[in-house]
Image (cartoon, rainbow, N blue to C red; front, side, top):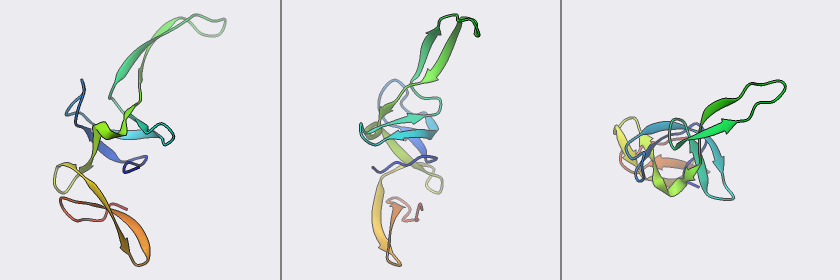
Length: 101
């Protein structure tokens, strides 16, 4: 997968198009990710003995193909490539050519 946890991404399709956020969680088996402040859903919590009833707003997962890595140097979304540097496989930004990690 081209996106990892703690990456900053920009949404390229859907109702949240153009929003930027940090990746909170990656679900590799389904190819979906959780992005901070994107695809916010309303969940109604029933009252229990310990907690009151509440309406919670939580982020829902979106498909990883609907986001692009946000390059701070280029100040826009960019595709991610892989290359070998010093015997290790690293990710790099295709716009700026800068190594990501």
